[in-house]
Length: 284
Image 1 (cartoon, helix red, strand yellow):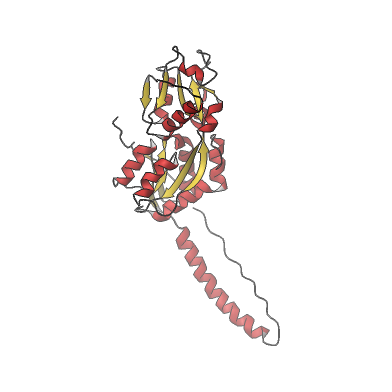
Image 2 (cartoon, rainbow, N blue to C red):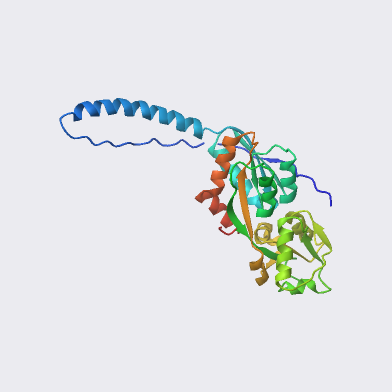
C-alpha cells in the first residue's frame, strides 16, 4: 500500500510572562545590617540575571512543526491555537496521519520538531533510529469503538456482529496503531474478520462510514466523538484488551527545539490534559 506524509496544516497566534523569584534571608547578630546590605546588592544583581535568563528561556518564536497521529487532529489543533495565543510570533504546523507513515517520514529526514504517536511501537521506529531527543513519555491513552451509520441500521451491538455476512466493515491497515489494536481486539474475542477495505489511518476508515461507503468501522472512541452526529458509536468489551498508549517526544534534529519543548509542555500540562480528556482520551 502506498502512503504519503499528509500536508501540513497551519494555525496562528501568542506568550506568557514568567513571574519573579522571591528569596528570603534571615540574619542575626551585630553584623546584620552589613550582611543585609551586601545580600540586597547581591540579591538585586541575581534577580536581574534570573529575570533575564527566565525571559530568554520562555521567549518562544518561529514555526514549530508537529507530526501527530490522525486521531489527535481535533485536540491538537485546539492546543495549537492556544500555543500561538500564548506565544506571539509563533506558528504551529501539523502533519496528521498514520503514525507509521509519519515515523517513516521523520527517519527519512522530514523536518519536524515534535512527534506524537498513537502507539509505542511506531514511536520505537523513531527512537531506534536515534531521531528522538530524550525518552518519549506517554501523555494519553485511547481505545477502540465501533462506528456505525447514524441510527445503527444494521443493529450492530457487538464485535462479533461485524463478522456476519451482512455489514460492510472497514478496518485501519494492520501496520498502523488503530489497525494493530483492531487485530488485538479480534484476537481477544477469538474472531476472524475480513473487511471490505483497509485504510491508511483512522480518519480515512471513519470517512468510509460517514460517506455511507461502509456500514461500520473499528476506530477510536475519540474519532466517534469528534464526528458528532455523522456516525453512531458502539462500545464492546474486547476493546479493553487493545488500549493504545500515546507517546510524545521532541525530535533530535528539531529546527526549533525551544518551541518544541514548550509545545510538549503544553500538551502534558493540566490544561492540555483537560483538552485531551474532553476529546475522549484517557489518562496514562
